[in-house]
Length: 425
Image 1 (cartoon, rainbow, N blue to C red):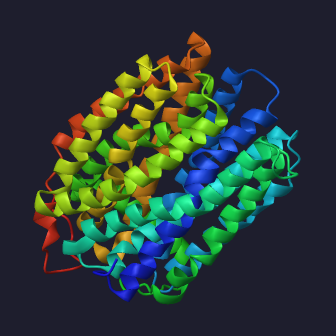
Image 2 (cartoon, helix red, strand yellow):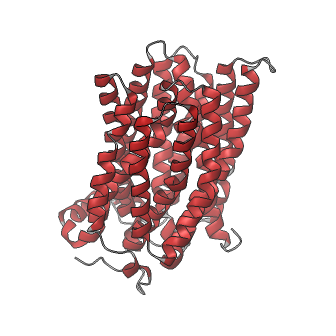
């Protein structure tokens, strides 16, 4: 962090802030809490969790391009960021007041706060072009993911301590009550550490506001889609990203449910996933430095290879030790592949239209996140085995890797002298 300036540090801090949500709400405590709240079979609960993730991502996927296009107007990006940030934090806090027996309402509130989280990330990612030049994007982006893993562990440790103390009857709270308190802790952490982002990060690149910004945004969006051939390299990468990031996101969102179906206790799962965060912290930063030495495309390939092996290995795991090994493998590449994908894309986009293109970046990512959990849910219900659903994810990595092979190296865009260049056909 000492090598980052004040604006870069403030931007990075939002990863520190919102990663608490990713850890507690998306990946660990809420999925386990839902398992306890749902009265049906564990297989069906896994399927319903997958469907809820698909619904939330479908909604934000449709909103992403137009939101990004509107945010390209100067002064709009931060306003939209604040709206979705508020939506996410408020509905995360509201999870704490839902009775544990109302599992349907629990899923509805989760869908809403996931929309707030994902929506804020559209604008946060697009701010990357405003806070740092192209040649340092890999380092700054990977630092964001790295520091996010550490930031997520602090409120998570507080939450897991409450849950474990409840489990052994040291404190007069039920496990369900401790989970609810953890949702409140997560919301407060997310809100407090977003303050530097709101205070110090400003939109530099953008276009002048027009008389009818919303209508004009739809027109610009239509023209971009119509002239997609002028951005061939960019959309080739997005197509590859669509597939491989689907696999990454699916493993993140379904890992806890999978471990639970294997018979691993909730407390063991929480400890394993906490350890994964500490592994992911240095590995994410290492990915960034290696991307500067080689290139981002090469490091994304490394991540795809590791995740393909994870899919195969997950089919054969039976014990807690096996799940530990799986978690370590995920930790080595989870942050790195996401961070370098973000900076790779940031180098390619025309900076004045960064939000519009990051809207497409988000829609490709979110539409992919609909497919993965849905595939896992369907295969799990048809076969009655979660392991077969997880194994099926390898298809996404193989297709994504094949398409990425044809995408351009990001090095040709790193040192562009014109910050608002148009991409080559």
